[in-house]
Amino acid sequence: MLHIERLKTDIEALSRLAVERQTLREDDVARALRWLAEAPDPATLRERLAPVTSGDHDWPGALPAADAPLTARFTVDGDPPHGTVVIGVDGSQVYPDPHAAVLYYLIQIGGLAFSYDGSRPRPYSCEALHFKDEEVYDAQGYPISNERVGMERLVQEMAYLAALTAIEHRLAPAAPLLALTDGPLLWPYVERSRSDSQAIEAYLDALTEIRQAGGLPVGYVARPGGRALVELLWAAQLAPEDVPGRLAENPLRRLTDAALMAHFLAPGERSAWFTRPSATNHRHAGRGHAVWFCYVNVGAARAPVIARVEAPEWGAQNADVITTLHAVLLHQSQVLNGYPYVLARAHEEALVTTADKAALDSEIQRHLFAQGILVRPSEKAQQKAILGKR
Amino acid sequence: MADTDSVITIGNVLRADIRGFVVASRIPEPDVPTFGTFVRAAIQQQRADLIGLVYNITLQDDPFLKNLAVTVIEDDPRYAEIIRDQQENRAVPVEIAVAAIGYRDEDGYHYGLPPQPPMILHRITVCSKDEVRHITAAPDFMRALFDNRDVPADELIPTALQRAARLRPEALRAEFFLDAGRYLAQYLGRDPVRLERILRRLM
Image (cartoon, rainbow over all chains, first blue to last red; front, top):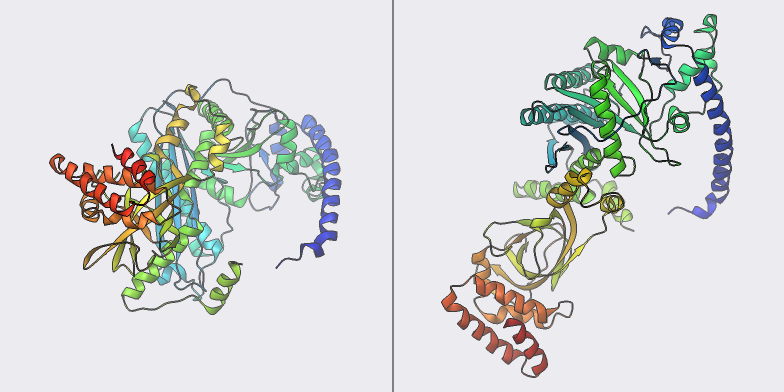
C-alpha cells in the first residue's frame, strides 16, 4: 500500500521545482532562439565541427545535413497526393518471466496500410512465440533480458514493414509508398555482443528491402527527448579554436530540442534536416542508410505538438517524396490530435492485453496438462498475483 | 448470426454465474451477435457445453473513437478512409451478456440451469443451425428464462422462438409455435397479462 500522505512534502517540492524549471526554460528558449538566428551557414558549421564528427568522438550534437540554413522552416499546402500509400507498423511483447509457469516470450506486430484513394485501409498483424532454449536463455544460461527482447522486436518490426511494403507495392506499383514505424529509425541499442551485431545487420537488411520495394522508411518519434540541435547551437556560438575544447560547457543543460522547436515551428511547419555523427549512424551509412532527422509541429495554435521525423539520407534528399511525407503526417496527425492515425491503429493491432496474456498462459498450461505435465508459477509470482488483485 | 452455419467465436468469458455470463469481445461490427442469438461455451473441463441466449450488448467506452469523434466529419472526403477503417475493420469493444437455457453433454441436451458456469476466459461460440434446432426441439428451453430477473424474458422468448422457427421447414412452423404457446399458457397461466404480452410479440 502506498502512503500518499507521507509523500505530501515531496509532492509540494516537486511542484515548486516544476515552476522553477518552467521559468528557467523560458529564459533558455529565448537564448537558444537567439543562437539559432545567429548560427553560421551549414558548410561553416560542418567545417568547424569536423574534429568531432568522425564517429570516434562521443559528441552528442547534430550536424546540418543539407544546405538549408538552420532557421529554415518548411510548409506544405493541400492534402496528400491521391493514391499515396502510407503503412504504419508497431509492435508489442510479453517479456520472459522467470517466475511464470513456463518461460517464453511473445512478439506481436501490427500494421495498417492506408491508401489515399477512398478505399478501406488494410489491417495486418503477425505474432511469434519464442520458447526454445536458445531463444529464451543467454550464453550464460540466464533468461534473456528485456532489452534483448526489445532488440528482437525492433528487427521483427522492420522486417514486417519490409514485407508489407512489398505487398503494397505489388498492389499499387506507381504509388508513393511511405513506411512508418513508431520510434527512431536510427538503431537505438549499444552493440555489445555478436548477437547484437547480427540484430543490427538484420535491421539494416530490412531497410534495404524497403528501399528495393519502392518504399521510404520513416521513424516517427512522438514527444522526442534529446538535445542534439541545442548542442549544435552551442557549438555554433563557439570560436573555431574552442572546438572541441569547450563543447562540454553548454549552459543550456535543461533545454531539449522539442521545447525549443515548440517555440520555433508554427503549426504545420517542419525544420531543416540534421544528422548525427555517431558511430551507429556511421554503421548505417556503411550500408547506405545514414539517418537524417527533422522536427515537425503537428499540433495547433497555442498547442504545439513536436515530433522528430527520421529518414534515410537517400529519401530525405528527395524533395517530392518529403513534401508528400510532410502532407501525410499533417493529415494523419490532425485526425488524432497530434499522432498519426496509421501508427495508432498499428499499435491497436499489435497490442497484447493483460487478458490476452492470461488467455495465452491458460491455453499453454491446458496443453501441458493434457500431456501430463503440471506446471505452476513460482510461489513468489502466486503471492504477487493474490496481492495484485487487492 | 444464428441463421448461418458459420461458426464464429465471439470472445472470452469475463464473469459468470450459474444463470449466465458476460463475454468481453473485440470483433468487427458485422460479427457482433444480435439480441436472441444462441451461443455455447465449454463447461466442466470441456466435457459439456452450456447453451445460452444473448440478452444484452453493451458498447464499451472507447477513447480512440472519442478522439476521432471531434475531428472526423462524416461526408468529408478527407476522412473517407478513416471512416471505412472504423466501420469495416476495427474491432468494436463490447460486452455481451448471455442467459443460460440449458446444456449439452454426452447424454444429449438438458434444459434448465447448467451444473457449472463456464470458467473465466473460456471462448464463446455462436451455435450452428443444427444445435439451435436441437436445443429448441422442446419448449422447455424457455424454462430458465422465466425466473431470471436479470433478463428481459418477455422480449427474449419471442425473439428466440422466431429465430428457431425460421430454421424449420415452413410446414412445421405453425405446429412449433402452437407447442410453444401451449407451454407458455401452462407456465404463465396465473399471469395472463404477461402471457398475452409474449404471445402478441409472436404474431
